[in-house]
Image (cartoon, rainbow, N blue to C red; front, side, top):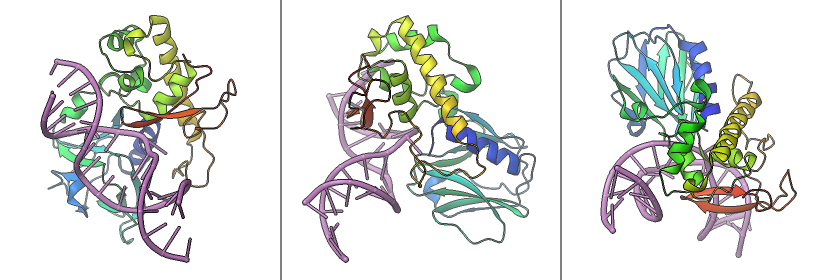
Length: 257
DNA sequence: AACGGAACCTGAAAGC
DNA sequence: TGCTTTCAGGTTCCGT
């Protein structure tokens, strides 16, 4: 369920549950999502950090537990004696507190290492670092990709995913298929505002301790994501779905240029 | 070096 | 009803 807002939620949830606590046991149910998860008993989790869609939990031995939620990853707290929950792939126990990692599609990762290239290669985090419009415009101008694909490049801005890119470009009134090179500095400013707006909106929408996601009964909280064939909330033109860079995309042909 | 596309997975929803 | 197809919020690898 991961884009930056969901991962930020997971960060806070994990921090409240295990920050400063000592690992007493671990269990990996499916080795495909875990790497180097060994000899963790006795280690203390110093903090829970986030950059983009990655989580980092530094340990007291110089290593860290890196976590990525993939498409369907999720952490949930249980009691140590509770049975495995559906889709449980791994667990970290802290005495009576047991954190379960669930992941239906197995695209997520739990990696124990001192450093992780994927983490080091991340660009600035829009929430923690803000967005440098000049830098964003520079990155956009240096590639032949579409603006949507460039925005989703994690080295450009860490944490912008399919939803944030779709929503931000709608907010900025720019077509997702526009070549990055043709985005002006002024438009880059609008995109930056759109990204911040989209992230803040998503964060505000998730206040519950245990997140209930969009598809489970709740209404779609997004302006145009998942709303192909519905009228644009701004200009009433019918929203269009297409594929860009292999990812489903929605845009408004009426007010995005 | 950069880019497009396939691969990696499973489940839910839509289509027939 | 039941089988088939489509789709899903991500990353990584591979060939060009």
